[in-house]
Length: 38
Image 1 (cartoon, rainbow, N blue to C red):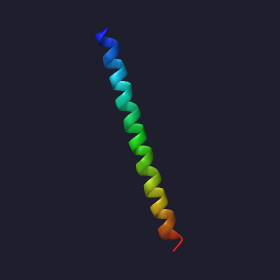
Image 2 (image 1 turned 90 degrees about the vertical axis):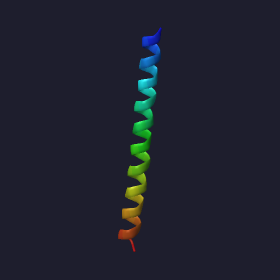
Image 3 (image 1 turned 45 degrees about the horizontal axis):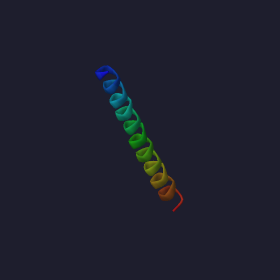
């Protein structure tokens, strides 16, 4: 059972990492687009 917990926690960390990267990428892209449109 402990292995399942480890796998689930790792997958949660993986999802959190992807979500963080996606948010940063969107933020950076928005800033670049906004600056370029000025």
